Image (tube, rainbow, N blue to C red; front, side, top):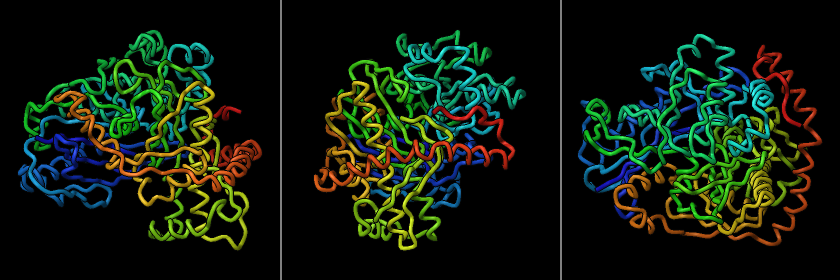
Length: 533
């Protein structure tokens, strides 16, 4: 018996086959890129999600379950998106897929007509900053304190409602035809089962459409933004959404009738993947962006962070997210001629604490929490002719660590108890990044055996659905612990003060530069009104 988990991320889609003991049998990856058609706009075609899901699933089934062969469009070499090549690994034939779990980046806004056909590329989560004017308008109409009280979070670049409002204002023909809202996980669930559902957690990020206290849609505010919206049925991430249809079976190689879970947003699936779902747990997701989820005992409403329902019924989360983290290191790697990551990490190690006098703000795509400033920009301070690429790479790693500390301090001020930190994601490989984060924050981090992340969490949800949560309790034990170095921590305390001073000292300048860039691109209307001070 095997469980399939697939996650649609910002830079790639990943799939895993996992057996009943939690052992990863095989993995497959498809790299992709998002579209950035205008400054502040970040989009992706939903059909890419479906194509990559099909390719990943057929590759895994063909290679490890005796599934369809290349005649049906499957096979280990088929369908890599964006020039990527498949990377499936694993041994053995664990048996048929018993259930499918899905997760994906979010909250996203994929608008579809009444027949669930996408009408335009999906507007992605908080990295897309186009809807600043719509945030201001909805704040005025609905009341910022009222939104925080009912929804648990204020309107921000992460919110769904302002992005829908942006489409209504700028693409009225699309908006007039739009009836349904999808995110990557719910879009794939619909393609597999025909069900139009959304999980409670993703809905709770769909500000201002969801009432976190009532755990239900709040129709008056839906009508204020999108009066002709057909609301998806709400279910919890581990609930069954439906079963694989005959049409979907032919496309994917999955057996008709295979249960499909409702799924959720990738970061919450990551938390499930490492068992960081108990009060006092904090999950750090190292990836293209950095995400933090603290599980709390009650809803904590603070405008600087996101208060949501959790992955399981009855749980609450306090979350934060940085707009960039690994994206900055990849940007630097590209500037350095696609240099080998291991070499860059070694050079960053040699640079030492403080990157030889550099300080960086990692706001290269604006920033989400806790400053909520879409017009924030990356800043590198202290540059000299003697600085090397290793220093710059180290400064980027340290910048994300300071951003994590900024979020952790905001969480603690809000009342979150942080007793255990679990690190997950591709950035945990190599060790240096996690060590820097521990040194900057003073927090030990547990590193689990499996850091595949959200895809593994989606598979774990699928297994728990059929076998019970107790059956997955032993999945993914801790393999290592990253403990902070007190000497490095003392040095970073002083550097953190400089980091925190750098943003207010440069804010007016970078806001003016952001406006100039929009004016040069002819997109000032997309983000007029400026950013919060």
